[in-house]
Image 1 (cartoon, helix red, strand yellow):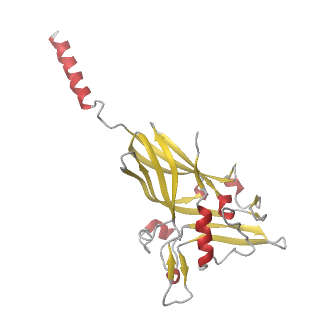
Image 2 (cartoon, rainbow, N blue to C red; image 1 turned 45 degrees about the vertical axis):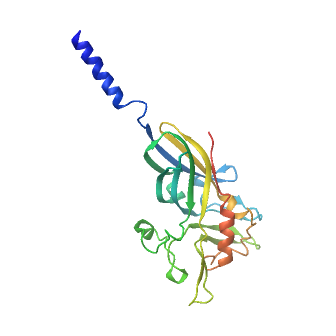
Image 3 (cartoon, helix red, strand yellow; image 1 turned 90 degrees about the horizontal axis):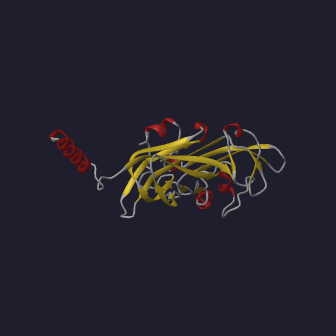
Length: 249
């Protein structure tokens, strides 16, 4: 009988150590799923002219990679859980996942920055981005690309022509001694989500939005040499704000 009582006391002590006040945590993964409008884009779709933008131009996707930074969850007490300081999303890697461990269960607001804010856009400090040729030339202010979106389109003469939809911090370099910069990164708020056990968050990346909302993009006018084009960078900033959305299962 004494052994039974001792066993029950031990269970009670263990229960007290892992009682209702203990914070339950889980692993969270985030997937970026790429689409053109509502059609999923697959690896086999690359390098084939098969997509039509809002301006009516047929185009292909050869490469799409971009930076998301400051990926965070914010709970009801405004406590911030950083899931990733930054991540290079490269569609060529097929399925891109951000993983985070020991996230407390509960409701959160999910957000991230597309690109880098000026505070984080310091030239040369991210070695993995350096090795992936994601740097911006010093003559354009240094720092890093926010996006490299490359492909081909059929021009007005029905000829395949390359485009380089590259996004960086906007720079007006008309006066080389007095360059003017504008931070074109932007915050993406994906709303409130509920984190349960081993949760998987899916984010839809609609690439067609880069060409249509709110500015209809004319590839015959804006196709290459966009990095030193201040106005083009501002238009990209405006169009990018409708690219990302949360997929609700």
